[in-house]
Structure formats: structure tokens, C-alpha cells
Image 1 (cartoon, rainbow, N blue to C red):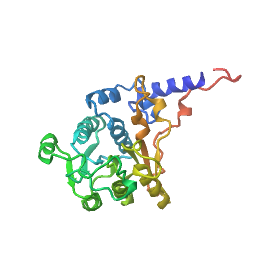
Image 2: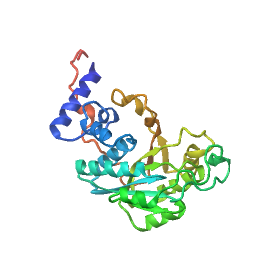
Image 3: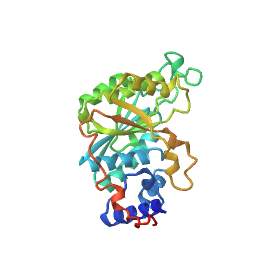
Image 4: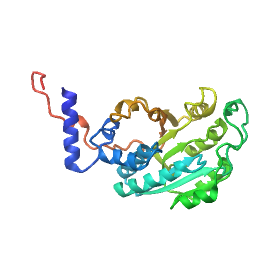
Amino acid sequence: MLLSRIKKALRSRISKSGHEPLFYHERFSRENPFFLELRRQSGCNHSYAWGVLQAADLAKRLGLDRISVLEFGVAGGNGLVAMERISERVSQHYGVAIDVIGFDTGVGLPAPQDNRDLPDICREADFPMDQEKLRQRLKTAKLFLGQVGETISDFVQMRPAPIAFISFDMDFYSSTMQGVKIFDAGEELLLPRIHCFFDDVFACGDFNGERLAISEFNASHASRKISQIHGLKYFVPDGMVNQMLWEKYYMAYIFDHSLYGRHLLGKRFLDLAPAPSVDGST
């Protein structure tokens, strides 16, 4: 009963203040029409809606007016087109400019290097891109084509807006290892927490593919870590509980970022709740 009162008080204060909640269960509640509208408008490829929304929310709370959202592994481009469309709506909603960037070889998957690259299910040249057709579909998104280890360096040298959301969809361990090197960038290019969508964590085990890349990154970094956002699926709206996409959401924690410890919520939620009576009843 007390928890219910706390939630009700939170929603009331949030409604009066005009601010949206940061808590995952509140963000996904049926009382958040913007997220549900955003998900519907982004069509069948709605995997990025929540990540881009959370990225802009965090940027707004940190006082940033521009961010970057990235897709590693563009292939035919449906995901990047959806990310661009989502970003346009989220940008209007939050008043935060969003730059959309896609990374791909432009010619499909490279040849698998060894067993860690899932050679049993992936082949060289899988998921090719029609570059001209894709460019005609995009409005403002930028493409970096070539080996990701090289194009990331080119991207960083351009001093982009801080990175706030990343989709990793490169299938291979070796390619993902190159992609996660983006988290080695200086803090001026990163938010202190970066929402991530790892599309292929179900296609591999703990010792190959994306999961191995995440594990090895964590083992080699003391102050920057990547972790699944545990329990996220339990806070989604009705009708979305069984979708596996929520288990693909991770967070990159940049613990050594100067803004990491900045408090984001204002008053703590217990301060907003009605006090229980002296005898402990509600």
C-alpha cells in the first residue's frame, strides 16, 4: 500500500512539474503516451525507441543541447532509417539536437577470423548494403563506410557531440571488439552512462560473438564497464512483456567521467511520498 502511495505521489508531482520520470518502471508505464506513440510511429523496427529516448532524457538532465546516437552494422539500412525517424521526434520532444551516425563496411560482413566470429552461421558478404538506395532514404544521418577499426578513428577526430546511445549489430566477436573501443574515447565525447542495444547477444554463447566481446572489454577496463540492464522486461507496458528486445539493452558505465556522480532526480522519491501515520498505517 505504501509503495502504491509513493508511486501515486510521484506521478502527481511529475505531472505538476512538467518533468518526466527517469525511473524505468515509470518511463514504461501506460501513463507515458509519448513512448508508446514513438514506438508505434517507428514501425516494425522499434528496438531503438527507448534507447534514444533515454539518451535525450539524460542529456537534458545534464544540461547538454546536442548528442550523437550510433548504429554499428547498418546493412540494408532499415535500422538506421528508423533511428533517424525516432531521433527527429525525440529531439523535438526534449529540445536536444541528435546527430545520427551509421558504421558499416558497405559490402556486407567481412570474412570470419576464427571460431569466435560464429563461422557456422555467418558468412563473408552477408547483409550487403545498396549504398545509393540507402542514401536516398536518409535525411541527415551520416555514414562511415569501411573497417570499423579505422572509421571510428575518423569519427573521433571529427569531435562529434557526446555519444548517448549505441546499437551494436555486427554479429562477429572481432567486429564488436573494434566497436566497443569507442568507449575508450575522452569523456568529452561520451555521456557518463551510455545506453546500448546489443542485437546479437542471443546468437552466441559466453565464449564467442558479442557476449565474449563484452566480457573481454570488462576484463580489460577498471573504470569503464558494460552491463545488461537487469529486470528491464518486468517494467514494460502490457503487451510488451514477452519481447526479447528488453534483454538486449545494456548500459556502458563511464565511472571515471567527471559527470558520473551528478545527481539527476532532484528530491529523492521518498521526500515526495506521503508520510505514514504514527502507528505505521497508511
